[in-house]
Image (cartoon, rainbow, N blue to C red; front, side, top):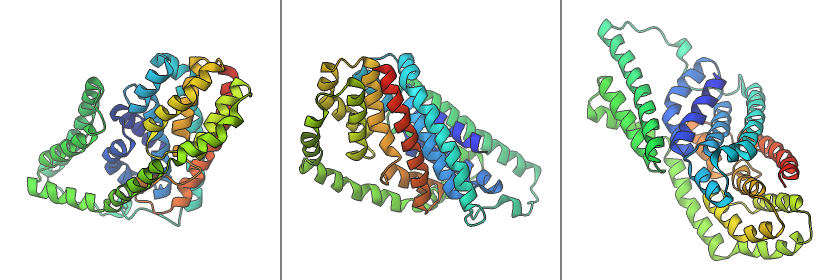
Length: 336
């Protein structure tokens, strides 16, 4: 079951280019099955966060991949070979191990309200059983078709909204629901995530305030003299470490662009090759999703997985951050 969550999340998030939107599409299927095999909400949230992130920095048409290929100068196969796949492997390994640990810590204490194993079998007519099977097929077929369309047309973030609405409409209609019933089901589902919408809405003034106060630039001016005179490999690692502390959560493309604009000339002057520059950009913009501080991405995946325990997301994130710090400390020595 855990492998299924990881594989489906990587595929859908990598295809659509959005972790929140991609996982929101498949979570309706994941939760009932996870409940049946006794996976806890924190475990599901950690798996979705880990796998969705991997999908975003390996998918060929995701915003972060398109940006990093443009800024770093590598082809997509070279990007995967030198940076994307090594980070994916380490992130998945650390996330998989932590998901097992989180499951052990929460098993018997937390569970989903949905429990298919305890529900009595319903007496359904042949027509009802056929309609249920058709609605399930319509759900899967619509997701697959729209994912392919999204890849072909290189759709942006807003495409995920179209996919979710179309999937709900097709599944409901094939399942025999009236349009009003479909809307009522949508309202019920959206109502559970209103708090997440408010969180994102309130988060924007904080980012605007930090930008207006030039806090990031001030930190840069303080640390830039300390980066002069060190080896190219340690220069790359220092920029990476700086971005973990001075991160811009939820804005990977913006942070990637800012890092290239500020530190790009310094990396070029130090003789860092495109592979090293690309590694810096990826590490600087993606690792801080997992920590050391809570991020909006964590809250988003917790909301989708119906988890209310932030500490388990932090445990998972910290393990992934430490694993990637070790990875890039070695990778910079090899690439640079």
